[in-house]
Length: 85
Image (tube, rainbow, N blue to C red; front, side, top):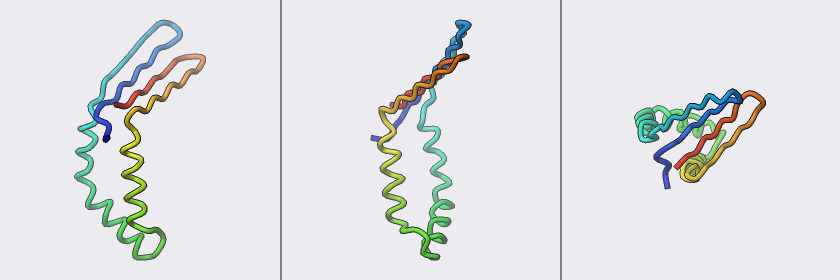
């Protein structure tokens, strides 16, 4: 399933907390650039550097598997949590 929402939380050791919800459908508007990316992929494929269907299949697999991703980074100064739904 394609992810639709991302949550980013930042909390510092001093007690300051910040959180934001990002709707990922706005990111999908970047797909308007898809024709340019496909043209670049075609040029690269014509030179034989990559197999275009394999590249598209791998990219689609990465995007579909982002749903459920949790990234939790901790340091001495702050903690950052990124969740993708």
